[in-house]
Length: 490
Ligand SMILES: Cc1cc2nc3c(=O)[nH]c(=O)nc-3n(C[C@H](O)[C@H](O)[C@H](O)COP(=O)(O)OP(=O)(O)OC[C@H]3O[C@@H](n4cnc5c(N)ncnc54)[C@H](O)[C@@H]3O)c2cc1C
Image 1 (cartoon, helix red, strand yellow):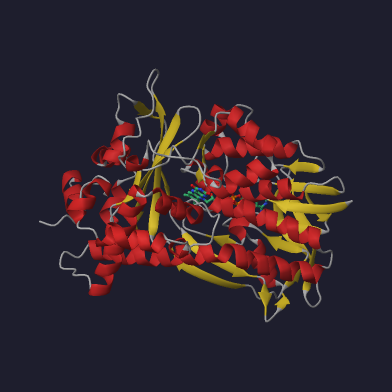
Image 2 (cartoon, protein in one colour):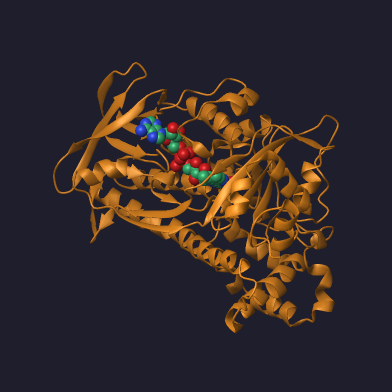
């Protein structure tokens, strides 16, 4: 029997256990927090999850995760759907002008989103993982260190764990998977032992604020009338996240430099007042339709991080693999983290199956992680830098964009947006990268897409007026004035 220890039972840890479980393996999932209560609502209301600060923030699960679960873990998909998790398929997500004329084509079946509270997804995933052969959870147990064999390179041979009673013990392993998330200590422990782990960091530039709601009895979700449920007002980004069992949440992401807004938005009355001024949120939070069920959760320290475990063509460590947020982090706004974490775990499983040589495993894991995940990370990093610039410009009433910036904005607003809202081929071409099913930036290269987008760009605005989305919400000055906040232009 091969023994694999997985540190953390978050999404990457559960994904790793799912991907690695096999009759000839013992998989020990070591988790600092207690197991969830048996009931889904109790899990949402009271599961104490100190190890996952983002547990009660809005989560959405993209097509990559959906299709991976459907294809490799069909029983899990059944369990999720039976627990109230919902599949929003490609057709339901079509922009209003495209509804009615839709014909399904192969590939559309992968472009589904799973709507669920994170607590529900994690709870059901955990039940599924518990039923797999050889998997054992060791809960309320903290990993305190790595057992390291010194050599060139280092080899991780096990873990030091601390039980709830405070008792410490050594656990020898064949492989350690670090799925301990954004605050992993493994990187530090390895560095203290001489590993050189390069790390690239780039700001996300926003703070996250989330509130959960429940539909009132006899009320339904608002009809999909074309009012966007997500958008970017420049000084605030908003998103409605439908979820399971009549729940939904709203996230408002505020640029770090919007000081007055970010300090007042945690007050429930301010949060709801902002929602009431954004039509895409207001139709959900209308008090006749839904009631808030939580406070406003806030989260900062959001960054893009990428770590490298191979240097100058040599692995820095053997027998150790970091997956999910422990290895790379992206801005949560794009909803990529969970897809990325579970993909990463499956890359690891493929690599371990392909070779038993420890050096080859380390090299191949690094190579495939780079090839399959880095393009998304890099695209999001650049997107964040441009959003940070935009937020700064929003605060400057005298800002006049240069020609290049005006062209880029016009291409986004007057070409891509109306083209994707009025031409199913353009919309369909955009979706695979959004869902992490295709590398970013390729959609314009698909046959005929560039010509279709340019054709729409060339049309006068009056001819494509019906293809623009409705106004997303008030501009910055208006919003701050209405909320009585500092920073509003006189
Ligand atoms: C505000 C916010 C919103 C997000 N929204 C989305 C979204 O909409 N869609 C999406 O796909 N992603 C989203 N993400 C990203 C997603 O939450 C993460 O990418 C994902 O949780 C990563 O999984 P993980 O297992 O690596 O880390 P986590 O899920 O954080 O799990 C880490 C686990 O390790 C445990 N642990 C840590 N240290 C130890 C230790 N020493 N010993 C034992 N156990 C330990 C923790 O208790 C925890 O259970 C969001 C992130 C944030 C911050």
